[in-house]
Image (cartoon, rainbow, N blue to C red; front, side, top):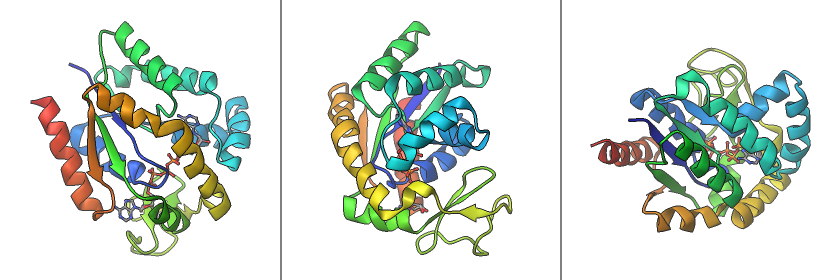
Length: 219
Ligand code: AP5
């Protein structure tokens, strides 16, 4: 049976960090809407250029564009056994579109781990984040530093700081999250899918709790 997991949480909660661990351990495809937009931006596609204007301001890319992009990704053969979604859905319309899409395949969302972190912690996390250019591996200068500053431990590629991690943009991303994405916590809780994890614990402890929750739905 296909397994679909949606990682929910504010910007900087640790979704990307945890997704890398879970995807590897659970042999699941990691589908990150933010990474898909950034790849398009790197390739200077029309989609990437359009998304950039929203991303730079910390606003959400319109639903129709985002839904079409994720639908296309989930339709690829490597996702037939399911996927680990990171950063999607982010609005009630996206959540409904995902439910409908999975239903057409006779599937559904199996689990929604919600990584809870308070806003004041998020600003410090994103201010100190460094991401690798090749594969998007994520570091933090204080909480998860690379062995050599500026180089990815895993693939040796250059580490960079994201444009949208500037304090003013981060504040807007958190505001947008509270207004448009936080309502999904209740949406998934009502459906019995939500498992809340304290995202202020050390990275390894958060991973352990997420993997336990996944083991439960798999059993
Ligand atoms: P996206 O790339 O999805 O960004 P985000 O959701 O804002 O999430 P982040 O990637 O910033 O944070 P994260 O939770 O993955 O944290 P991370 O693991 O890196 O979206 C970017 C933009 O794209 C959006 O603003 C929007 O414009 C557009 N977009 C994307 N999806 C969209 C959608 N569905 N609809 C419309 N628009 C969309 O960790 C953060 C830092 O904390 C790192 O430095 C890490 O090392 C550190 N850290 C992680 N865990 C811990 C821990 N437990 N303790 C201490 N430090 C930790």
